[in-house]
Length: 270
Image 1 (cartoon, rainbow, N blue to C red):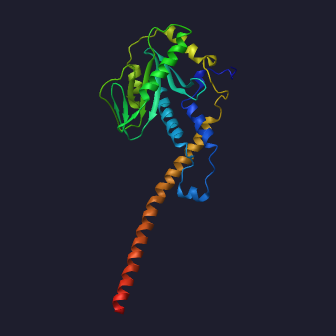
Image 2: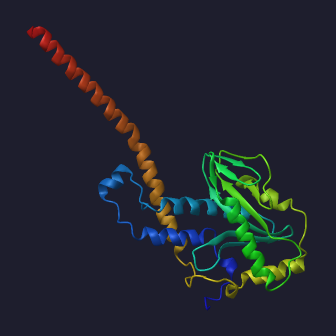
Image 3: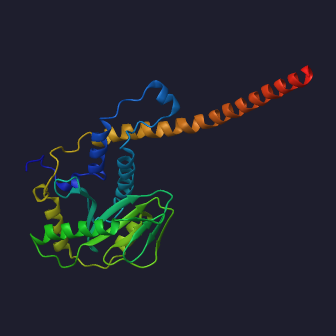
């Protein structure tokens, strides 16, 4: 596969998610002036999930950018031609780590040995995280032996709480706010030579099946424009909400006055 010469470390956080979002958003007709006035979201019917997912991955990407230079960070690495990608892969003194990012703002997360619940609803995140770690393990083992197993993480962004009742087998579940500290505190399992070898393998575009031919140029700019429109629509709705409540209250008052007038008229007529 021939791409531009950039390595995989040039991919940015949420790149795959943004590609899916913008591709779906192209099918969405532009809002009418009235819809803009009402603060209707510009997002298409099927785009909200992609948009929130991209926000979560970008947030985690910002956190990972604060890691010491001993850590190499990869984003949006593709796994075959079915649209699956690994949100983040890290290589550092603490080992090779896969990160599956999930955004569930304001919701409670409960972790047990074999399950993750979001507001008591089971989600398959442990299984997905294990699959991603296994795929990276297979890709690397085909080229060089690993001295330590790949570590799968599930990281929640914006959750109200993340409570672990029993630690799952192999998978670690974290609140995103703990991520950088958790990584830095890892015991050293990879020496600099092994880290460099793994980084070079992961950075090679030829290693990745189903890698899009596009370089990602212009994607973040288009996402930033869409994000600004979404935020402006939310602000417009907040501005209109008190006005709508005021109009509704005024309508009730007018209706009551009319009713009182009518009753008084009927009584006087009697």
